[in-house]
Length: 96
Image (cartoon, rainbow, N blue to C red; front, side, top):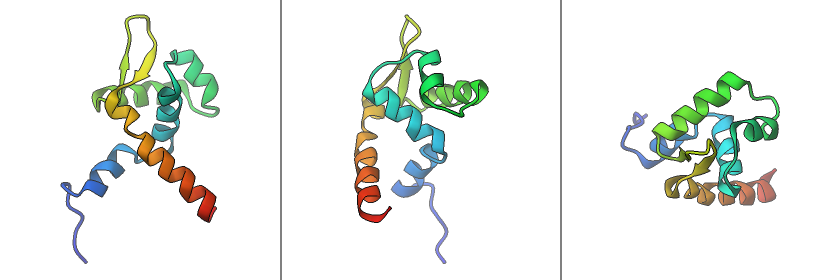
């Protein structure tokens, strides 16, 4: 079996989206800017610590930015995840 290369496009995207919360957070921010407390309410079951860490990581990855007023918003790179979001919706309709 061939080992997975870190340069593989699937590997690169999978590493960014490697947990459930990332796409759920991004879905909310693609819809529009949100404050931390708004995200916390919309993402039932996420702990404050997890949300804090995920937002920090998403900022480091350039998927979101934090505005001066404290709201989070998806960057152009983050909004690009709409492609994956749409593919997930299609998959759900066809297979789940």
